[in-house]
Image (cartoon, rainbow, N blue to C red; front, top):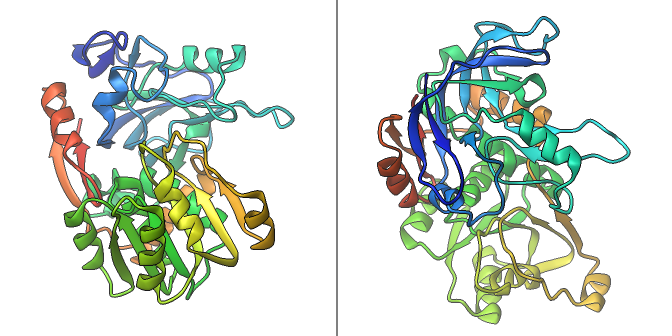
Length: 358
């Protein structure tokens, strides 16, 4: 079969013919139908987003049709359309460990252990390929997905699921005022869609890309775009003005940022008893004042990936029409030229993305 392989972060991502994956205990083989190529994929391939187990078939997430299942697998069946999350957990309750397959990312404190090394060594079949082998625990059957009219749009489901995990942890309720920092990015755009489906009262969609913010504002009058000016005080004031008051909830979906100022602007814009959830890729130390966190009774939470149950709930929203994916701007691509696809993906943001159709 054809697949995108990465031998190391010192070599280019390549299209290669590799052996077909063979089913083994606890796993299933899928024929991939649609996989999102994140905007930062090129950066990841050169080591810019943390360590990755190589050599590997690259790729995380995606939608596939189940071809073969092991005798001990019952969560998916041959013929199912399934979501590949790529999120593998050790299952040890007292000392849980988590990794992303075919990608970068180690849960918890992010430190490698013998367990995480073993988990990543055993599974080297990512989803940028015609077929993949995945542990059954990372697969979610999507009943009715075979009738969904555009499978390329479903490639966004993994990102929607991750955003939904953060929205769930925020305890957002209908009518709440929400600020999303990094809203002009793909994860932030996903959070906007989820919040609208949940009945949010108003969203201050904060970002730097004006075109993406305008697309978000066109979705619904509840979305109020706020273009960051790079000043913490000014950005916080703009958020409060856009919402018509302080925010009940803040979701930070920023990617790598030169400072923590925009994240802290959202913190400053929270009301008493507000909640902030950190979802993105900021690599800065947050200067959280102890006394403010205490006196304002702020709840601060982290959110990384999402459970299979949350992913399934998002699919149910899509299938019911509650979560409308028509606003997504999808570019499709094939496996033939990895470099060209990475270049296209690098230019996408917000509700636009590249879907690989292997």
